[in-house]
Image (cartoon, rainbow, N blue to C red):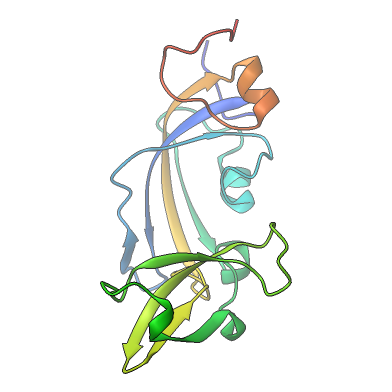
Length: 165
């Protein structure tokens, strides 16, 4: 039976990502494994392009910023006092930050993008925000999802899953 990419199948992809000029953004060293069928495991436009494909077939999908990691939001850049951070602070370090109103839902990962004197610049944008991206994916495996994976809406790791008859 030749399986095709369809709702409630687990898909394994070899992939790489470039910008529109062909510069590599993510060489996709590890395969991407996701639950197909609108579970938000992968960008919807890529999922759409993969629908009905078989093992060995490839797609190339160009995503605009709003279809990928969003537009760059200057409001997510903050300048904080250096004294509020650990001594061994370096550009590239990440911190989790919450919104001013204290709601739990909107935690943002902030990257340190600059340290100047007694000020630290934090950026809560995804590093690829504002970028158009070209995803090239090849389907390398397809299997039916387990009932538990479908119920949970994501892939479970390993081949030693229990209770997934």
